[in-house]
Image 1 (cartoon, rainbow, N blue to C red):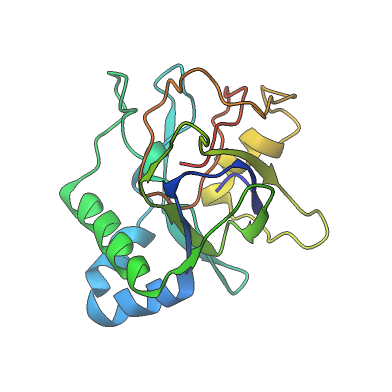
Image 2: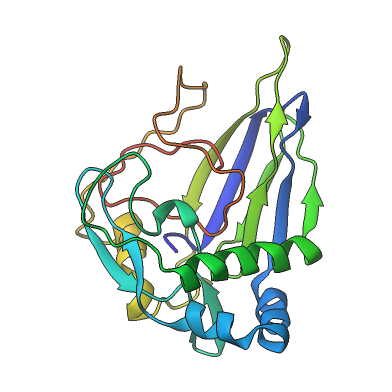
Length: 217
């Protein structure tokens, strides 16, 4: 969850690979509803442990898909579900059904995705609540090093209403009581990224104590 509009600014593109892919959550939902209705039930069940903090074991339980005001909203970021990969804490692990559901979504999305070959200087904006996104693997060379600046944006006029079950991550980014008021965006690549990168991801959001944006996962 976390933002209405996800924006990517391409500061530098990879020598090979690193394409961005977008898939319609409605298309994926309908496909799984026809083929694997048990997966849809798992995705709609509000028992997914969602991380709220990157420095302590703070989480809440929520669905990763929900309906609100006649719209299907997706909040499906594997990086924020279950325990943090670099920490030992009391956040519950994902169940077998949940892990299987994530794989089913990834497989279904890959069948209907749109490939975008973004070049240096490109800007991408898309509805983070309605689309699933990912990127593939990439390689750099001596003349290029893939780097994107990611912005979490919202529209007070056109933004979708956020249901209570998905509100905490959104509040971490935009709420009046958010802990981080000013975030830093690395327009120059960081020496190293402390958080594990994911080849496949989807809707993203910020931690309540996350001070900076990193490149696209």
